[in-house]
Length: 376
Ligand SMILES: *Cc1c(COP(=O)(O)O)cnc(C)c1O
Image 1 (cartoon, helix red, strand yellow):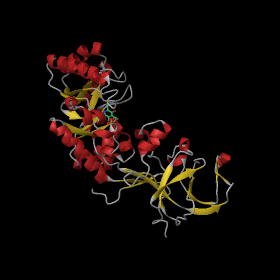
Image 2: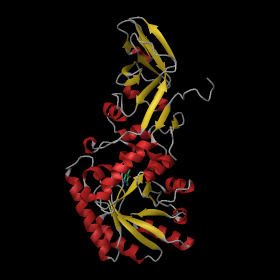
Image 3: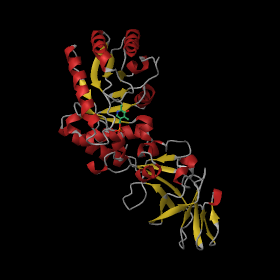
Image 4: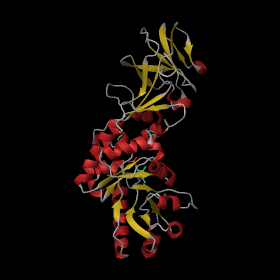
């Protein structure tokens, strides 16, 4: 094998067809309530690749894209994506001119942000497309309700500013029935009514993945699913989605060890009988949480097998019993789980986090990302 064909040590394989199909499911649910779909591709598409995920989402029926920052949105424009693009989080002194020049919609939560957007419009001669954000209870960004009437009137009076939308973000939509959801929805409606009274006719958007899947009454004009487009479902029983990312490596060495021998740093696992162990060259520097030590399986040779001993920076060891996998055999650390193998959700549940953190954590230089049969 040449260096070119040798499998990567750590490989994130992204199924763009799965993203397209997940978006098709989400956007058909949105369309049933008259809403369009903004696919969220922030944080490099939750670790899947922003541009590739964006193109797959557009093929699946999304008509808008959302990215966290202007910088993320600009990268998509520069890649030649001409769909409506929205970004919502900047530094306190950001210059909005690049967004206006590139036709990127921006979010405004405060009078100071409005002033900077209006200033950028005056300097560039470009109209600003603004989504006014109301804080309905998450208490992150967004305009507090008491300042909202002033903000909407000021925005309505700005000559260079078009108020495209009123929007907000939910705190606990992944817990269907949580009382905060209806409370936030009520405050959202009040904020929208005040914008109408100020003479504005904005779109409305509120729903993340969980609300897209469970609260059609909150779809309004546009839904903003993120994690679900990657096939990870915050309300698992609400739809059948396909995880798009498979994280894998391969066997680089096997050996027999005798009963009583221990494995990896700290010698935390001891073989109870003679066994074959396989060395796999991925570790916590490749996104395998060290806190999974002794608590994870891999899919190797058509079955689950336990990782034994500590997860190291660069390697893990798999107990194969009396099987001897060939060198180069594929080792799946997480994937779709369709055959019973581990998933990102399983990792997250084991270590007390969410699958969002697992997949976004795969965006790192040592992990090679590939798009088999890319449908671009
Ligand atoms: C991340 C994010 C979303 C998507 O949330 P998911 O739970 O991943 O669907 C939507 N809107 C905003 C403002 C976000 O920050």
